[in-house]
Length: 90
Image 1 (cartoon, rainbow, N blue to C red):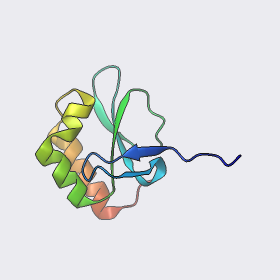
Image 2 (image 1 turned 60 degrees about the vertical axis):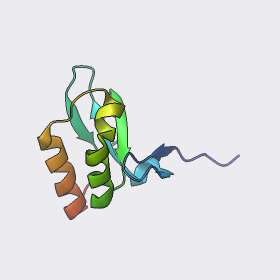
Image 3 (image 1 turned 90 degrees about the vertical axis):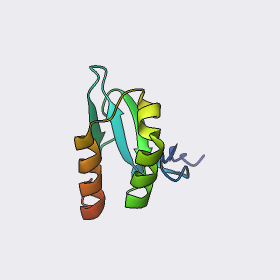
Image 4 (image 1 turned 45 degrees about the vertical axis):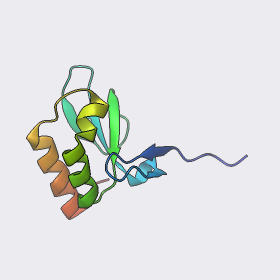
């Protein structure tokens, strides 16, 4: 039986894509919000396509804040924007 590829939904465009193609934003059990490129960090995760348009949609709709149930620091949004411009994570 072929191995299934985990799918996650982007908080910006709402499309389902393979987990490896997305950037994970995670709220740790301590309440801090960070980027998780390995997909292994402990906590509640939300996903975004590595596309600045998806980030803009997610910020405008507050989708990440709703998903993670916590206000997202501006520094996290800035770091996401930097990663998407460079696209050198992983």
